[in-house]
Length: 480
Ligand code: FCB
Image (cartoon, rainbow, N blue to C red; front, side, top):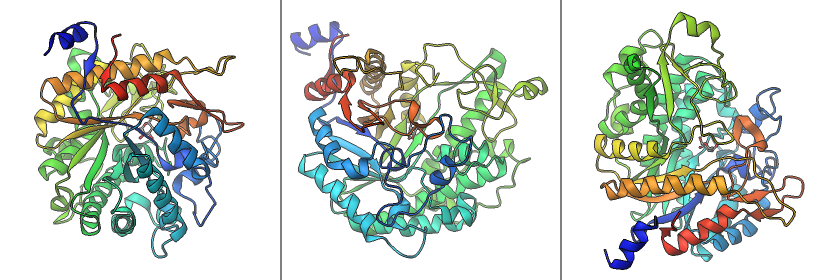
């Protein structure tokens, strides 16, 4: 270090490696709106968000942030913030509206225009193929519980790869298959709203199979220089008491190793298979599936928000708990871990974000070190991290979201510490660019760097966006 660097480090300013990728992320259904336009057909989230009681504030993604119409303005905002990369998702029901068969050229044209607009501004596009918007017709045939969906996904992946592969730097197959499987099929908090542990495990396997087949389909259609990835929401699991070691092991299996082991080691963990024997015989795993799933990827996306506290299931807990597991809508008591009858999630002390998710940046460093040591050899990118707070637009039109800045700053310090200890982290994407439709919570929870007024759809850069601009330009965190 030079003497200036030593002084800056002492003042709390932290440098990131040259070439570190600074970005922000969004997902199609959360921002696009225009749900009936240009040939798009319903996805499971259209159906679910219009189901009474499914969304906490009764809103839907029908309009959301209207990015479908305003993408040019939003790409200009990204350039204004200085983003080097933008992670977006492609809506399957825009590309193959009924999930199989006819391809919708207008859908392809939209993403093609978006990608071109990004490239014109020097912003690297990262495309996720599945951020939860399964075409409804595939759900009607069983959705992720049906093995055929993996085949349909591979067909769709090849279409997107062929259309955008010449311009998109990185393709990610799936975003957070844990949520798709365990919140979608395990406790019903997410679309399609089913609550059946056996279906959840089946769905998890078919999502992994879709990933593996999707990787092959992408490799066949994109140039060798383009990268293939997958994004997981990985958990830092702690026990509520010293005697909860078994619950921690079990939940780690159901949440982390169920995805990481087949991907990186080509096998499901033996303890997970044992733990779940009463739920399923795993006969949905066929010869060759695990080899397909373990096809190497170029980079692993990691999403992280908050750690988890768990305890072993007891009869006592079962009577007090609600099925709203993993969701802070019921913070008063423990809730069953999605898909499991062996463990419960326990509410944690603050500090909290507006989701009532505990803020604990040290957990992110711990997680990155763990992935690096247990599953070495694959570079990591933080594909989502950020926080919802109850933002207020003041009379001057500014949003002073100091808590969001503090959250992102602290988590970036954790990423920096992990890098310093030898973990290969290539980039960081704030969740999220724009306030948007936060799934089961609706529009009320604001995670954006940019405020969206849902009455006018006007955009306002929050203080966090202005702060992030400085971080990106300097490739370092300012002193705290
Ligand atoms: C993640 C999702 C993302 C967003 C954040 C808050 O689980 O991938 O779409 O909702 O949580």
